[in-house]
Image (cartoon, rainbow over all chains, first blue to last red; front, side, top):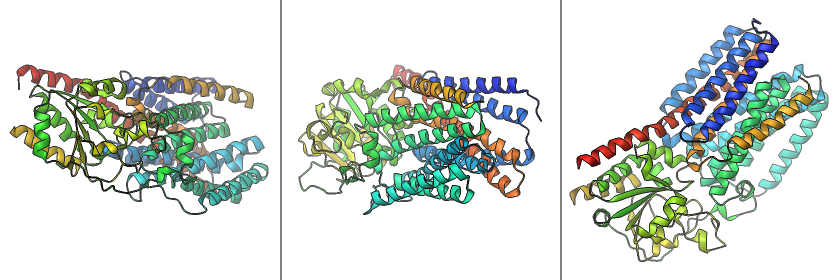
Length: 457
Length: 106
């Protein structure tokens, strides 16, 4: 079915590519984000329809069937997923995209006569496989199918180096000979490299790796576009590769990390591995009723939600508590650290889902000067993002990370599961300060108790 | 398309990619990552081309697997991003509701 001549085909691909650019630009601003995403979807639809109308295709019923199967699997999952599980779903979708690119490149090998095309093929194979396997490990970590701590073993750098060297050797042979068995070996080596790349990354750094692998998949798709001579794939893949790189760096910067430090920190035996050491110093532990009194007779309360709140699914209870306090005439704000939650920007999504109004969500730069005027800072399931060690102790793994200045508030209340340190594995001196009190327990349960006590005041 | 044109397009696309997201606020990092993730699902076009040329049943099977995976990336990615952004949209309504409740003195 070649209904479209090459000129129309190219024009329609150009329209789709422009839509992708507009989509990314739209997604960069809150006002236009949703429209941007829809424009992107429209661009994708134009691209897919165009390929059906322009290329000489066999097996069309099979292809349509496969598209139905893929949609039938993905759409319900995407609709039903809990907002807290968003990061692992993004990882999974990213992984299957990388896998698809690798398979496309593998099948094109037999058609490729030119060594340059085979160079693009080995690139797609390797990067696509790294992205697929790496995303798989990230998914397992976030879904807690395996430990979220960095996994390192003796000789890991050596094994990684050996895998990469073998991959380069296999790639060179494939470029010159087009050997299918070696291409399969390259695929396996890519999978191994992906696993080894992500295993040593722990905890809060995992989301940044998703973003990096997202950029990788973009590059693989761009290279597969070179293989197929398809401009749309080249443009779309390159766009994602470039914007993904910027985004990865922005996320890392928000955590005061470098991307290289995240990937290779554990290789060097760096401090991101953390510890579970618990200090013997005394803390002031408090009851839900005490916390309710503190909050209920304050004039200004700032709530600092963190990862623990997301895990406990406590965002709705937190929103209710804010409402209850506001009905007593108390000014309540949520202070959102750029990396609160499981992924940068994740906490904004969770609180938006819980119907916390936009005006109450304050970004770090805006809220930090206001802690001085707050009577109570209520820290729910956050630790590293309020740890003064980021400012004061230059040896600390989080040194340099911008933090929320909760120590400036008159009273600080931590709702925590236990005295265990946060992801960075370092103690928080703020916990032992005289103005600090702690309420131990699951974030959601604690919030519910405090909420009940506030209502009873 | 010749190699030089492809290279030109690629280099220009790199700069466009850098430029369009350079000023994104941290609030939107998650949706932007998810949206970019959906866009590379366009590898579906490549998978369709490969499947449409397949003569051997094994090649067809692998190509159809690629079509399924790419569709999951594309469709799932856009749907989940839309859901996320829908919630951002909803907060305005919630704000006015709360303001109304405040005005009622409840």
